[in-house]
Length: 424
Image: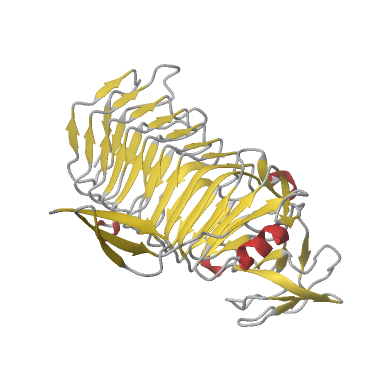
């Protein structure tokens, strides 16, 4: 007797039958329906073009997650849209725009101390509940010393907010509160997708946002997060920053006009995949910060950034740079930051990249490799200057650098020669 198996959907029990000489097994498949909520115009599930409307949709998704679809239009962003695990944030393409509101700032007049949830300012007129804030002073003005939060209430000149201060900020040391903030944040989450929208950072009317704590998109202490087909333009800070993460994929995005780094992985972010992006007219195209390892940088364009196309350094090991186009940056195409041997970016491989015409405004090299990085491989790359000789040499080799492996590279057009060695 012949036997076949078929799948029947949405049947609450398992059935078995004999029919016309066949034994039929029916396998139950549980019914699953992903929740989708639309945001935008009059026909959307949630009507409104603000971060509050999008946040309402995110918060309305069931615990197992779902999808928020933003319609075409300009969404006013006064605080980051906070995504949680198993959530997809989708736009309708480049005409779905998340635009930062105009900035506001005020000095604070009473010391803002560690663990507090309030700060008293000179002028609170521009601050509103639901607005993002950044708190700094002269001593604590960057990286992990900066506090960020969202205002919960404004009472006279005192702002109350939702996240404890992480330092003691003295008011007489240029203590400042600004409403700078990210547009989208993923903090302490996993399995998140962002796709198909634009970010307008409104750079000219916003204060600088610290890059370890925020950016057009910020991802912190999260894993399995993907950002694809997103445009981040004119952000006063960094385009996309991800810190203390695992398995983040940044693919086919367009990042330009940011006052700091275009793309910034760091603070221990293994297995990042950075592929098919364009990062240009920023300060640095790709700034690989601390402990970014076992990662792939492939098929990207890093160009016309004011400093370097790519910068790498502290414990940034085992990274493959393949088929990237790195050109017309202000300084070096690729810059290795100097580190002692134990902290150097060992075992980085550059395969099939085109690195040309860098050093346009500051002079530079195709690759500037200093420090103590071991097992650096350059293979099948094109490294050339075809214009005015601003890219002084293909490779600058520091005096303490261990032997690098050069194989089948095409180097040409450099006024100082192909390889320049620092004098010992």
